[in-house]
Length: 197
Image (tube, rainbow, N blue to C red; front, side):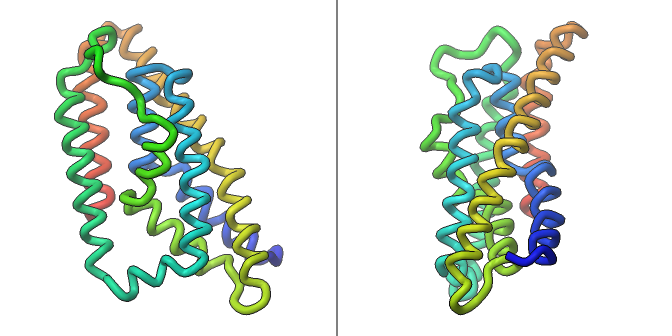
């Protein structure tokens, strides 16, 4: 990968990884609800799942969206429905009163979520177009891209988990912990707006 392509990729990847989106908002929500330690498997699922998705898209799966343009819209609405369901359940949540059956996402669940995450699809497709070379350099550049995604993901995940911990701490200090569910539900609704527009 040439220095020019690497700089262009990092210029696109860093903002994409660190701005709000389904993965980041879910990590923040999980960290606020369950703590950073219990959210680690969720984060690891994203760290492994998204680079794997990038690799598979780079092998040619991204062409599916060219052949089936309605699929992107279907994924957006599937993710929106999931987030609306999460927001509904979060409305009744506050620190200390999580229901016994509630838990963070497991590793495999977070990894599989990438396949219905519209922001992940958009990122994967744009990264592949930007960084993967055609012809004989295809596999080498695809492996480099996958490694770069694997290197950035833990930093983004840790940042958003820390945001969740800070949100929980702020609400506890301010005596507003009973409103945590409403705050998190609002963030889920924001995520719906972000990937439907």
